Length: 300
Image 1 (tube, one colour):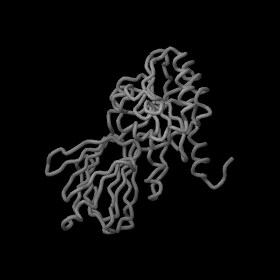
Image 2 (cartoon, helix red, strand yellow):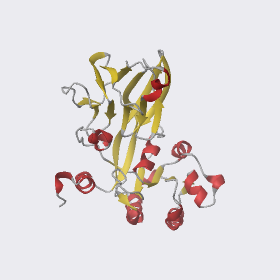
Image 3 (cartoon, helix red, strand yellow):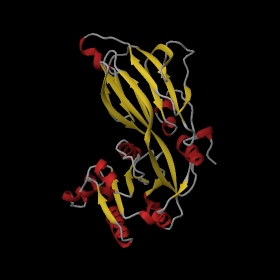
Image 4 (cartoon, helix red, strand yellow):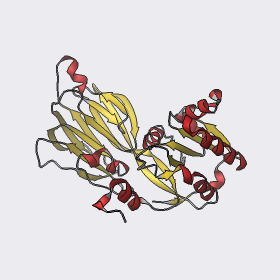
């Protein structure tokens, strides 16, 4: 799945940061000088431009990604997830730097930023492809809205602790009708996020598949299943509620964006034609599992 990164085509480098980037101003200025020496054009997002007092130059993530040949994200996993959901159709390699707490996806620390950039511009880093979900909501038989998700799309409850009844089809073939607290459709990248906490399996990010994971189903025989990524999953909401309670069911994308759902809404999930490419210096997947999840209870 990895392929070599051709740094020769990089002319414009975008910088996307978390909102509270102020405490890292010195790092931003050092990055600016570094990229200027490399002779590349720097495109700042609205957060970094504000801190650097370049408000007029700041672009929103979607526009920045379209114009950039390569992007550096500086924040936590949340910053990378927000970036992925605005990813364009073209390949935009992303170097993710962790300035947050967990940093499961953004495994590189700020202290290694310039070492990694040196390796990247010298052609010693590879691209790690990650699948993205395309999630389309249909309401009353018509397309309502479409979203992207790097980790997962989850159907879940609001304030009311009541079961949700759903009908699941895969490639227009009935799989099951069941009641549960919710449902998670996760990519391999997202297998270590919400799905894992709901009892789902850890799936290597290079596996070409999806995880369909019911959350607390009434029937104990309903288990998580890993499906090939060329399948389309259709979920029909069969729960009908009274008055204002209807909007207590929601579709959550990467744990960040929430869309209220209604009775007989249909959600269609498939692999997007877009992929996210992470710049990496080597395979650290199992090391991340050991260190971040304390996988197996012992860290070598």
